[in-house]
Image 1 (cartoon, rainbow, N blue to C red):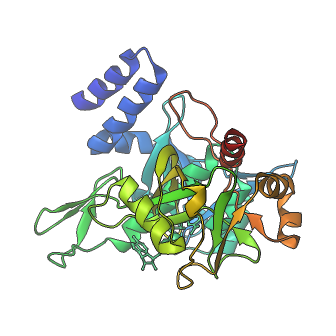
Image 2: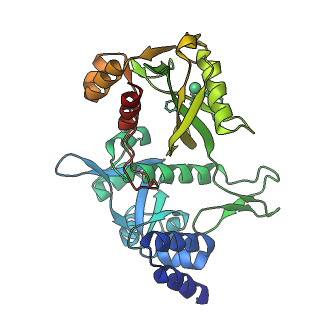
Image 3: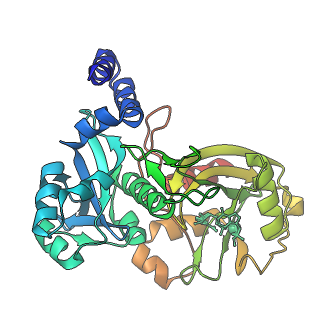
Length: 340
Ligand SMILES: NC(=O)C1=CN([C@@H]2O[C@H](COP(=O)(O)OP(=O)(O)OC[C@H]3O[C@@H](n4cnc5c(N)ncnc54)[C@H](O)[C@@H]3O)[C@@H](O)[C@H]2O)C=CC1
Ligand SMILES: [Mg+2]
């Protein structure tokens, strides 16, 4: 109890609300009792087999369902489940007012009955990622990644014995060896290559028809960001990068949990002849500023009818040093404007 009070006091003494929230969250991860207390009155994001619960408002836009712990307790009772399922909730963040946010997957319960009781729909993550706006999409992506990690890491890979989670769900420990496991991400570099006039986009055979995107690839063990970037560009399109600069980063939930680092890279216009590896990419080509501008200014449904068009990822709000909203479409446009 003393530790609970210390953590609450420590976070309330801070002058910055950001520092206070980060200290509060860290306290929840480190102390099971503090976390259990926070779970009693928390915000809860529900999932069914890893699909988040969304509600549609009067304007036709989608939001995550706003549920509190007590709502979920009633829901579980109505669905014939006992309250112990709540113990599987995983901490994902906290609000500006230091209210803990958890997520819970009720995949073992009746989906339709749950949707009726909550007045919402469980929507596939890829779809919800594009339906949600602002800070909600990254939070839902983080929640799904953590729920998936817990569902697939129930056993120690060294001993085969069960692993047990802490209250927050930020780690799992092998009951036999004591090995501690932390949620895993795969680092990825995504790069917009330019020859000073045009930018390079490619498409995989599995992409929707006509859709082109910046090049991307997973980091190999031991590589630096620039080594991955140079290798991927060489492998996929046969070019040698001259220089690069870091742009921004985000968690990307597909195919599982990737940590994407976005960069700009330049190649010499004299050595811009593409040699595409067709086992990796179906096509890659140079796009002019005008082509990218007109594709990005065309609404997405019409874009699909007029290929080729560049991929514009969903708009998400990320914390940057200047607290500015980072919008991938604008980054591409600004870069091209700088080039011209
Ligand atoms: N242009 C693109 O390809 C775009 C890719 N992304 C994301 O970038 C990431 C990388 O995409 P790719 O271009 O497909 O990667 P990639 O160019 O590295 O090729 C994929 C191959 O890398 C290998 N690989 C190495 N480490 C892996 C790991 N940790 N997980 C899965 N495969 C691994 C596998 O053999 C796999 O077939 C994915 O998260 C993808 O969703 C997002 C937007 C666009
Ligand atoms: Mg790739």
